[in-house]
Amino acid sequence: MMKTSWKRPSGRFSRVRSAREAGMTLANVVRVNIYTTDVDTLIQHFGILTEGFEGDRFATTVVGVARLAAPDILVALEATAMD
Image (tube, rainbow, N blue to C red):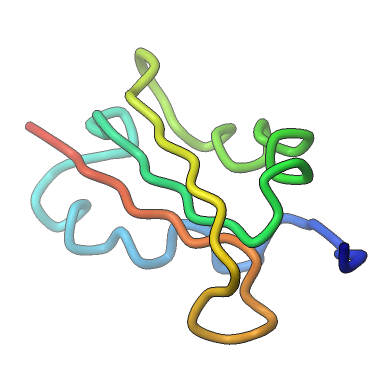
């Protein structure tokens, strides 16, 4: 297994602008799908991924994949928000 360094990305949640423009926040998130190349390490650092979310817990699916769009991407998040 490849050794990886997990850290908080500097641009975390920067792509949720369209939800913010619609008047939503991370509290509106009802589902998060997480794709990762290393499920064991993701579970160890799960708090880093979820610490920015507010409100009640949401449905979560974690999927292990062989690789993502680029070799240096370790985690991809797909979130669904409802008003």
